Image (cartoon, rainbow, N blue to C red; front, side):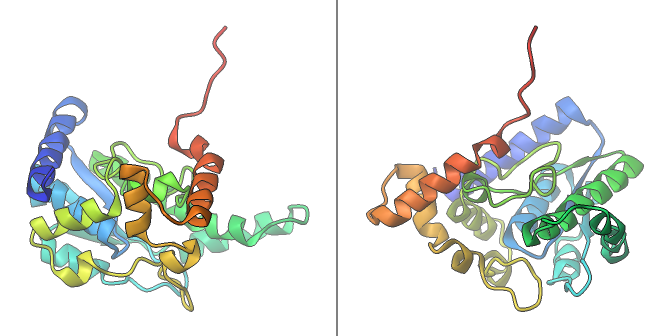
Length: 241
């Protein structure tokens, strides 16, 4: 499917979702300054109107806005900045009362979960619906925090790989510097997502869509990451008496 057509279908899907699940409500989403939140915000603005989209920047301590304020201004949507530094600092008392084993990964997952709590507080206040801005490529290998950035009320990008999202971004006329921005976590001394993975998004996207990956070691790594993180892609299972 051409990116222009994909864009139009996604916009129509958002409209239909709101007709069923939030007629007159606004879309509330976390703005990281990355391509996913930028494209998701632009799609929502096209589908609902700029006045019904709210972008929320939630920088942690030492984290920049990464251009989130400029993107919201460019898109013409409402912008809110809600720093989460003081909230995450409150977890110090939790750390102090936990047994040994509070890992770096545990530490890194706190801000995304705090952000989702803040988003839902803002969404409830504004009679909104929270946008999940994750994409299929990242979800496929578990690069999302359970009940953090993986949460939300609807997911316009959840079935799209990175290359498709970039194509939609260009079709929407979003400046290339934002669509093609190298993904990272925005923290000081951070490296790009692809450096962390050990493979590129284009390779991952091709494998997801076609099943083709010539590098057997990379294929096994992707498959292993996918298997370990499948539980993140579904709702909790429940006992059926």
